[in-house]
Structures are given as structure tokens and as C-alpha cells.
Length: 416
Ligand SMILES: [Zn+2]
Image (tube, rainbow, N blue to C red):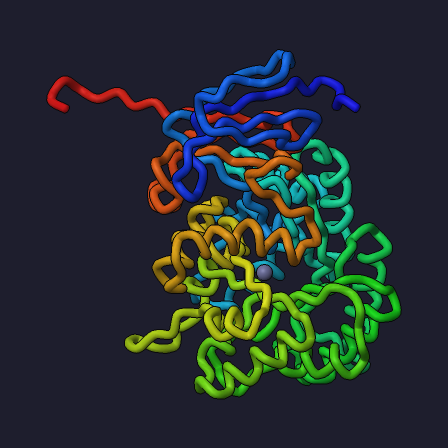
């Protein structure tokens, strides 16, 4: 079946991540052939030809952890202390101004920028609680429908901290309402509850009741005594929870003694929990309590990978009180995973594409016949150069359709 309005496309002279030069044929939303550059087409289809000489062709990145409801608030809301508590207080104070229309407008602009940079799917957390109600989820649900042809949006209902006991009842009730309003994953912040272990139990009990996937903000602190990730692994194994479990941040795992980091990583692997590290935001928020010998805010990436855990990288906050500098760019995340996370460029890019797709339950994309044609071409001579230079000259394809094409032009005077 031909997808209406989608013509066959032939991308010529593309540099693949391994350096090979290839012509890539795309039809009906998928890659149909990958041939050595210069090999003549062997069929009679009329292809629209796109010359990718000077471009690297990559599986499109996906964003596994964003906050679209808070995006682009930086000009309105500051965070003088620069830490997590300051950011949470700032956003709570801003709730009255975050109307459904305001959330929709900012989230839309952020998604347009993200899709133009190459993201074809975004998992967003969405605040909900007695003050904000579920209007953030409602706004993002309608945006998800409106942008269905542009980007896959997954919505996590993010319960306000304080989920346990009598005082957490209103938060628990709003969380259930948010799921009924169209969020598909359950979220929360068990580590900043008065009783983190009980908070893990409470959130997981709701998830079992609703039979949904979960993604929790976990251990977003450099305090090594906080390790709710271990409680989560224990709970998943004890209850045999059989939906997808993601723990985002897991900063405190990165400051443990090596033996503890290894042991917890093995428990996380056994529980099949996926981890998202969020370098931009956690380099910004954490480590401020020290003037020197600062910690980096990243999780124990190497131990988790060695234990066989799926670890992805995300952008988290896109210009808001939690991170005023979010560039909305997979290459910013990948670049920080190279420089601050000490990964190779290849592995860093896998963490914002292959691994992120894996934990989001999305089909994998490879530059080979039969793969979905969700692709990003970027002006560069190699994958490492693409990450380093992050050129804005990009072509974004989703399901075999060109979504956007951006070109950088420079004018220089005669002295160059
Ligand atoms: Zn987050």
C-alpha cells in the first residue's frame, strides 16, 4: 500500500555512521534498499532524489525525557538559587499563570523546534497535583493528537512530591485523574517524599492497579544516602511487575562507592529497569553545595552498561527554572555524554537514539532495508563531527516523509 502523498525518495551519497558512502531508497515509509553510492537503480520507480553529499545520515533521535509543560519559561521565571529546590519552588509559584492555553502554546513551539532538530518522538512528563490540577495533561493530550503526523508524544503524569500518608491523598487522587485524562505512563518523585521507600510502594501499587508503564524521577541528588533506585528494583522483583519501568536521573548512583554502584546496577538489570541520564539539567542543578571538587550529576553510566541495563540520554528541561540553557538538540545531549560522561561518540549517539527508542517501546531504526524511514541527515563528515559541530543544516524524515529541511548560509567578507 502506498502512503498517500508520500513519493519514493532516493537519498544519494549519504555518509553512514561507519563512514561508508551509500544511496538509500525509501518507499512507503520504510527503507527498501541501501546500495553502494553510484549503483544505478534497478527498478522503474520515479524517485525524488536528494543529494546527501557532505551529510551524515543517522537513525532519527528521540527524546526520552522532556517537560513540555515547563518549556520556554526562562524569560518569565528565574531560579536564583540554581538548585532543584529553587526550581521546584519557582515552578509552583508559576502554576497560576500556567493556563491550558499557555502550556499548549509553549509546548507547541518546543515541539516544532525539537522536530526541526531531528526528534521524531518525545516522552514528556506533565505536572499534576491539587494546585495545577490536570490541565497540563489535558493540554499535552490535545497537542499529541494535533501533532500526530509530526512526532510521537508519550505523556507521563508527574505527581507532585508528597505521595504517601494522609497528606498525600490529594496528590494520589490527582495522579489517577491525570491518567484518566490521557497520560499513558505513571510518574512521580519518590526520592523527595518524606518516606521514599513507602513512596515507591505507593506509586507502584497505583501502577499495578492501572496496569501501566512507569517513569520516576529518581535520586536527583548527590547525597549518597538517598538510593530509592534500590527500593524500586526490590519492589519490581518482589511484585513481579510486568510493565516497563524507567528510572530517570539516578544521580546519587553516580556518587556511590564502586562496589555499591556495581551491586545496585546488577539489581537494576535483574529488575529490567531502564535508566535515563540527563546531563544538561543535572550538571546545572547538582553539585552547587561545593565550591571545589564538584560532582557531575550523571549516573553510574559505565556500571549500568556493564550490568546490561538499557541506559538512554535525554535533555530534560528546555529553558526553564530547572535548566535555562536547554538547547533542544540531541547533539547537545550526545556531546555532554562524550565530554562529561566519557562515552565514545558512537555510544553517546546510541543513547539518544537506539537506547531511547528501546525504553520508549518504539520500533528500532537502522540504515538498512526494512527499517522505518525515521532519519536525520546532518551536514558533517562523520558522526563525531556531527555531534561536535551540531550543524543546523539538517533534513528530518519521519515515516518516509521529509518533515523539515534547514540550511545554514554564511556570508563572509573578502578577507576570508
Ligand atoms: Zn525531569
